[in-house]
Image (cartoon, rainbow, N blue to C red; front, side, top):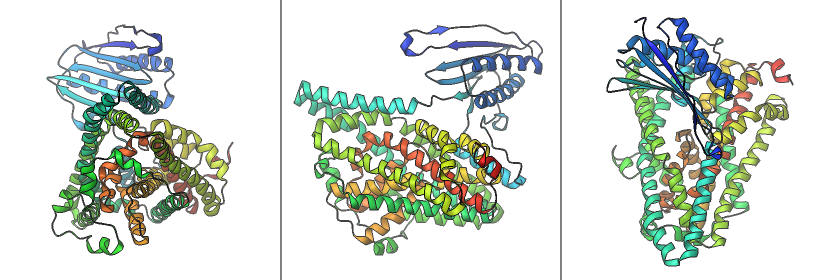
Length: 573
């Protein structure tokens, strides 16, 4: 480490678009490689973040990550300078560090994640829990080396309104574009729909269907291969898993009841789906309990993936996961490989989902052009049905809390409301996880031994909102395409929806993949999800609220039964 190594601090302050301008401030700090000089730079950045009113917890995490990165980058640097840039634009705040040097090792890169307090668990459980959090939440720090230049980024804060703004903007633009083009010229509107809108969302749907089988396989296989982690938590984990299953099947039942009390689905919406897709779906296999049991075992390992037979894919995934647990010490390597492949397909899925706003725009424009007002109202009824079920489930939770714990649901909702609001605007169970844990500890009084295990697992395994939207969407599509749903099909759908809700990763848009895989089994084209894709993003924001709330309720119930709640904290105003 050379004493003459410098660090340059460049600060960019970018004003909001409403100010119609960009203001740039730049100043330079010369420091050597001594730790106290690195601390001085970190302090300058910290003061700037405080000026921008970044949350104190996010500032502390960024400060810690910046300190570590500067130290490591100085050690591998091959020149006299490092450049530190701080950017804030539309609520997103990022620190970037760049400088020439040799690549950093993976173990030298900090995660930048707010880890929970784990003082009450042993070292093995602590390692398990930290691994789950990192895999579920991802890293807030990224480093890569490009032609000898190390470039590091620290995500300090993301805009809480970004997802909401983007969704509403693409919805509005798609609707406006559809009405404007249709008003200008009917032939032009038809050409716009057929040559631009339809190809774009068709390619998006094809990408989703391409990822469905491998994503579900590696997600389930990796989860079952790690089931020893669940067993290590003992009785609490059994109660937690039981609570997850109970609320999930209640959610499925609520979805079924809501649909049959008020059936929705206008057959004219078939016009949004191509005739080729409808004809192709006619040869699909119908769902029944008998067929589900008989066909669950595939004749080979390849056809389930080629034919996108979700039931057989899930069977192979469960079989592979349990098989790994029987391999003994060598099973750890296979488990690690499954985790890596699962992470790979999650990354690919996230890349595809980034194109969802474009697909939403095209789907909404296409819907406005091809359908009349009554059909648009029918699509709105789908969202109204799901949101009504979400609200009803919140009432169910309010009944479960006193029934199982004798605690006040009013106290729970009053203290948990900030997490629900964050889940709505961020639209990601993973992203809200650290804040979720913080509220469980500081407001609900739940022990770290309980919440630090249950919240990460619940984010993956407990998606009550997903259960509702899967059930209502399949029944909604069945009504549109005139498919009769028998009682046997209904039971089979309930079981399959529960398993798929577990398999779906906790990222926006993942349940669209699951819906697209169920529909062909009911002789409905997978392309039918284009009917709801335009408003699905908005629905998923409310769906996320139910998912995280359901997990917190189950955690509270299991923790109270094991006396893992500090009642002094719970009763504090």
